[in-house]
Image 1 (cartoon, rainbow, N blue to C red):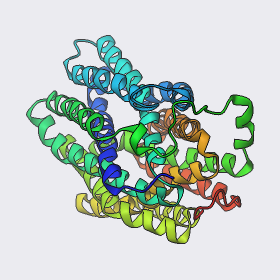
Image 2 (cartoon, rainbow, N blue to C red):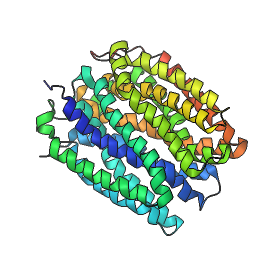
Image 3 (tube, rainbow, N blue to C red):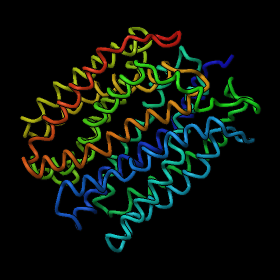
Length: 397
């Protein structure tokens, strides 16, 4: 029987901390590099989905492979040991590109490396945590991730104005330091109550039962709320610059308000999910973001914008903190890595679709359409949630 260790979960949060810093800086500043070569917002949006093309194909495979991996370091850690140093290296090289082709090469290599360890990092949480504590644990690790995003948007905007390479070099050093801490403090064979050298992961035939109606409905909801979120995240800095007239630094720093609210709401969101049920709390978050995105379309003032982003961060926490434990709770313990992979399959498919589609709408109708479309995606996600009835395993669903 695995015991809940808050200390281990906080340490595991270092993995999310480094991932969040890396992606926040990537999404905030890479569009500015691409803007020098591409005039179409749709084209920029398409290039920002490179990571998700890897994720949509690799995450389910890597997740299932980690379920079946056996080594002295465990089943997840070997993927971190390979992916994190490579991601740090190629991420640091991005601002030193010398041409459009070289920029794309560094982006592709960095994203490929990230795909090697993202699912195994996420799957470590349920490996180390009993079922009835996973929503709380997810709140802790997402709190760490949110802190990383705040540091990225706030400190990154300052560093970017000093030199375009500084945010990327800083995130690479942080990634290496976090890997070292994880290897030192986390031992899968000791900390995971379910790990045994002879344990076998499920074969594909036995996973057919995992695809129940509630899982499919939840994957549909995940797709549409990530469609809205990823599109806004990828295009927000361009929206702020071209629609409201913000500087590049102001636009990226404004996202820190969203992340700050997410951090403050992370732990309470996990507690609410455990007490009230994940589905109800997620629905409240989705309804809240429908309202926030709809209202943001009318905002032109910088500080009003930031206040709305604060509220949006709270509602996003209600969704994000509870969604991964929800998808895990609807399946079996032996398929945690696989379910982590299909979770990222749905979110990555949304992230592939959203920036280029929303970018195309912006090319046709202007930047004002961005938040209307995001509100529409959230509304569709709400419809999927309404029909979920499966209570999963013995957890608050």
